[in-house]
Image 1 (cartoon, rainbow, N blue to C red):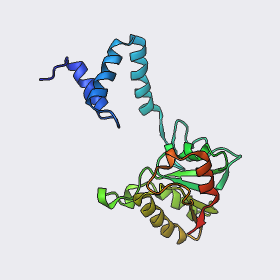
Image 2 (cartoon, rainbow, N blue to C red):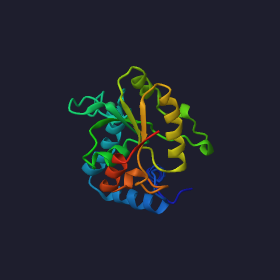
Image 3 (cartoon, helix red, strand yellow):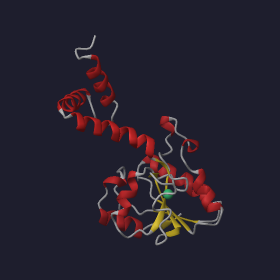
Image 4 (tube, rainbow, N blue to C red):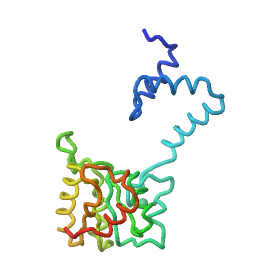
Length: 199
Ligand SMILES: [Zn+2]
């Protein structure tokens, strides 16, 4: 039997499912929520509920959005013929902060990882190939992370996309090998895009 009252034990169990949250942190957070005002606790609960109820994936680029298509896909000042492919929606922020990329995005929501049983069929690729196949794209920049999985994904996509006769480029190695582009500073990220090479 848990040493906590059932509602507390339940919240701790749920918090432990969050990335980076161990048992100790989960307990600390749960007690913090217990001590907070009813309004704050309700605001947290409704923010979680609304996140799931109101957010969806953009039907064009798979970015997380509350309006479909997303604000990048409908922005008339952006170059819709230049598409930057990233692993996760959070990677878009890393590229946006360079302020030098004016194209649009495509989010894969993962990488190919044979070790974890993730094949290309588990990624969101079909709406990208559809865009390219329809002749809507001049260049696809592959900005997956410089990890084994990111490189495997980039090489799979390069092969698949080149068959559709589109220019395919890979960001330069200014991004340290094995790292996550989410944590790359804007100067390095800018150089990585500037120095991209054709595949
Ligand atoms: Zn979009």
